[in-house]
Image 1 (cartoon, rainbow, N blue to C red):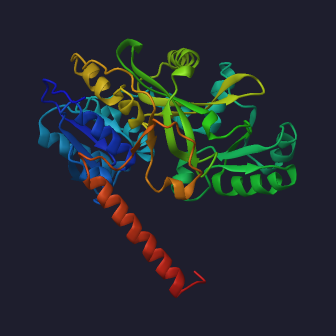
Image 2: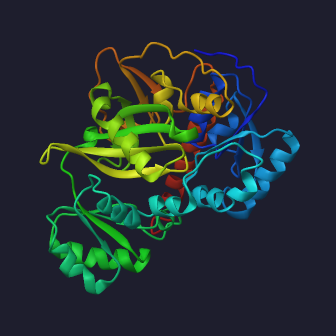
Image 3: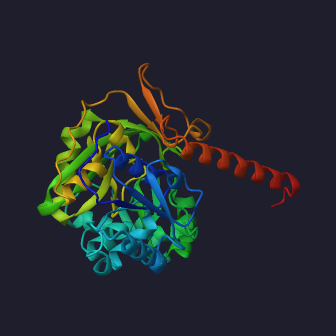
Length: 392
């Protein structure tokens, strides 16, 4: 449902990837003028009919800040800022004193951002506050590995504490070890490239046991908007990004109060999410990780199901009456791309399921045309290079 809000205040979205495209389309439902800031002109969100593309030299660090300041100076307004880029979270948090008078946005206090962004620090916070998380240990030195691993039940999951190490390509995101012998050498390798890591017991269950709460927390701790969803498949299977997901009304009564209590305890502000996994052994949901200072990869599934978090956040910050929510849609499935069946096992869907591709929309075709044509060409070039020089 599209509505026109009586506001001339624009929005600014950082990064035009799949996440940013979903935010831009969600704001488009309210006819909000939206600028998408990116250093890659070929990112699909830059080509949406709802976007006004803005090229930046960078999307983190000082280059991003300079681009935002220049954009705002030209607008003459105080736009609503939506960040979709994990590597820009610390940049925006560190420069909030420069940005807060020029943009509308909310984030937790900087110290809390640092804690929630670091997997080891978050694990320690969770333990100190009796939050339900998998049993785990923080690894900082090779001398600790044997003792700490012997205290856990296998299989285990090992992740770098600093997500920046993953994005820079210096460390893998998630590694699963079935046996102690392989974990000993694997953890040494992880510490060598990541410096610090979190080791947790694996929660048994497929990707469809993973749930998430997407939310926006505004003035005076008000939960402006919240949506509970469930993964149906991940890519790579079990440990990767969401490939398919849907609404999970059956989990709302359990997860939304739990999420609200967690946000209250840490005095969270702004957009974010919490990911959970159902643990059959303990018969409860365990927190896998929070997303802080940015929207989530599959954020648009909420909008498709009738809970437009970006638009409701915009209305809250500008003190506008949000549009009425449509009746909850059933059997809506969000799929990251039409290529997902080639990368992961396609989930079993109900006969009446309506699958929405992350890139393709009949009324907004350019992002899909660009993404799929460019992606296909890039894949063809990679195959050609391997054919010409198979040793590389």
